[in-house]
Length: 285
Image (cartoon, rainbow, N blue to C red; front, side, top):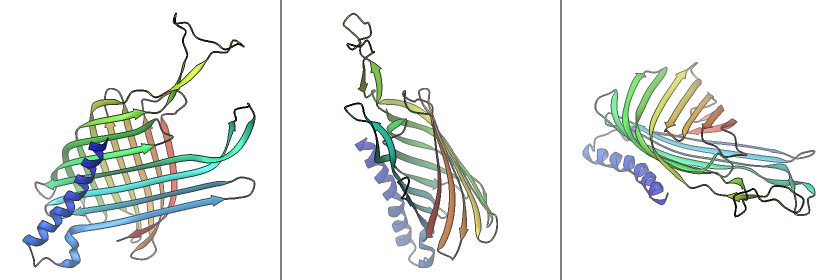
């Protein structure tokens, strides 16, 4: 995975290098255009105390560039939650514990080179780590074709598709302890024994697809939706992010988002679908 992380960082740096090259090639370029770069940061936090305790924080950073030559993106997201959970101690007693219940971050970048105003070739990389998900980590590098189907002042719609290589580590699981003759082992009371183990990491060729749409409902309200598909013979991963943002000023906005993530290959004790709803403060730059 170190190689995958290095590749992600390289992909993230390429747009900056390209932007600098464009600026050097055209010194009369209007600085206010900034090479077509835009960005946004989001943050949300909730905390409760009293009959129950919980803390939840999520943050997002996104950078994008689009001009006559390049269509590039970079993102970094994080989620962390703590809450009261019921656990059993070593003596068999049931106790309530304030513990981490979610810890996830993901990052990625894509570099697109335009053939014309609508079509482009794109190279993308993504890495995700999730302590409580179906996979402890997963990463993908892909190359493909992109097409901007619609782009005007009110609406945007683009598609990307192509092959990629994915590697992922399934979450820890439990299995029965077997005797030398292959029969299940039991304790003194006749209960079946089990042990925790980490499955081997998996690799496969996948197909990657991305649909990104945005529609401006009013002058200060926008609807955004992004669907990501990474499908292979062993594992299919789908993620859909939909959100509505309401601008308060030119820079600040409030955003309500809903995310659904699906992993087809799960271990016992984990579910295939994760859902997340957020209400964040957004800063655009």
